[in-house]
Amino acid sequence: MKHRPPAIDSLSRRSFVAKMAALGALGFAGAAVPRAGRAGGLELPFVNGHRELSAEFPGKGPMILQRTRPPLLETPFEVFDKGVFTPNDRFYVRWHLANIPTLIDPATFRLKVRGHVETPLSLTLESLAREFRPVELVAVNQCSGNSRGLFEPRVAGGEWANGAMGNALWTGVRLRDVLDRAGVRAGAVDVRFNGLDTGILPETPDFVKSLGVDHARDGEVLIAYAMNGQPLPLLNGFPLRLVVPGWYATYWIKMLDDIEVLVEPDDNFWMKKAYLIPDTPAADILPGQAGVKMIPISRMVPRSFVTNLKPDAELPAGRHSRIRGIAFGGDTGVRSVLVSPDAGRQWQQATLGTDHGKYSFRQWEATIVLPAPGPTTLMVKAINSDGVAQPERPNWNGSGFMRNVVESIPVRGI
Image (cartoon, rainbow, N blue to C red; front, top):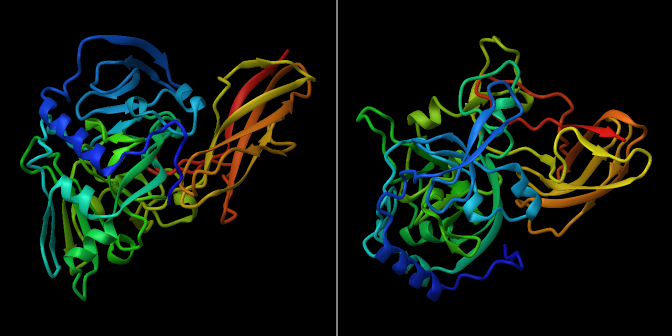
């Protein structure tokens, strides 16, 4: 699991405890309330795509403001051209419930482990850092509805462009190790996770998600206390969040404070009625199609992007141009990335950059030649380690989930 990026310092147990104590002394009073100041606006590539670029949120640089409360902040796409690891201050933010604590004392915080276990636990942050073996893992965190604004016909929900995702080095402890200390009893079925955020109205369903007990104990799922070598930012889940590599971010519970082992399948609202996809290939149905079996969303699918060009970029026709981007394999690694300078008529292999682990972004580069002056379409697609390739046709479902069509960028040869 250790794939340390060279620009990120390791967070030792001693430094983690010290930094947590410093954060506790500082506090987060008012932290979820936007500060004054705007950073301008921009147009996202769909109808009604004007958004403010906001630098108002604590711990965040300029972000695309999708919603203030609960905060939805999208990473500006040019950030992804600067490296594999998404900086903490530009990492996207997505909350479901509006009441987010603004003051969390690390000294009094406790992570509870309860339910169908031999020994219920109440763990301090210090005990997590000192008593369990630390683990590092690089993994993409991506909202299920990333790119929802590009669905046609349009669907309801947060109208993201492609920036509701990020890649980080997560540091924490294995969920399996914590569950083993509690002693999961025979007959356990699911493990349910809850955080400190709450709804405004009492009848609002608490945002809780579950994993099957075997998945929870597979040794890959983490309880993370650090992100890119620093304690988690408040808006990204301080002090703890679940990391479920290869799965969509709906399972990555933020401000995690409660783990419950269940003897029955979890039937809470967020598992049985929300975040459902059609049980069809690529979660794809026709608009208006009825009578489709629905299942919980889970594994991510491969994606790739060009990061150093914007739509309608001008490139010299008949001459070499260097392009670059990022790709990820979804629930596994990237086998290859293909690029086409002529709308998919011809494809060529890109050169892959450093492999930081199968759940990470991977940079790629290619040299292309536009065939002639005038408009054309530059395309890129990833193929993952299981041989799954991005499709040439976009999927559609009523929730706007799991878009991963081959990415296309209009460019012009000059």
